[in-house]
Amino acid sequence: MERNRNLLIDHCQIYNNHETGILFDHVDLHQAIVSNSHISYNAAAGIWLNGGSMRNFQFVGNDIEYNHDPGRDGCADIFIDMRNNGDSFREGTIVGNTIQADLTPRRREYPDSRWRRTAHGGFNGDHGQPDRQPDG
Image 1 (spheres, rainbow, N blue to C red):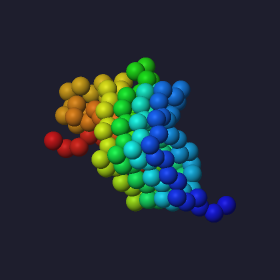
Image 2: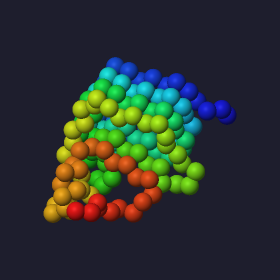
Image 3: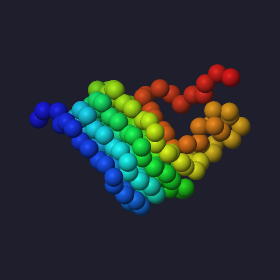
């Protein structure tokens, strides 16, 4: 199958789903735009890019908030997970969004860390590097 192209999600209300608002699960996709939408109160993630091959993603002008379950670890408003060999994500833009969230259980484990204290918004990305804190 050839690479899929030109997905547009615009002016949508994506609200209170059991797991994820928008899930890209091991897709082979070029050119996806998520814009001008309200993506809120989904249990695991608002937008989740889970493996695959993704190019030219744009998340622009959305209201993305409170996409987490307080009793669950690993939640985020935007979650990008490209840890497996062969997974790739390039040419992404996240701009002009309102991203608002509460601390998740994992973030609460490090209350004295400057990085953990200031990184309490809803973005969580993992590219296979061990969980580490920046110097300083």
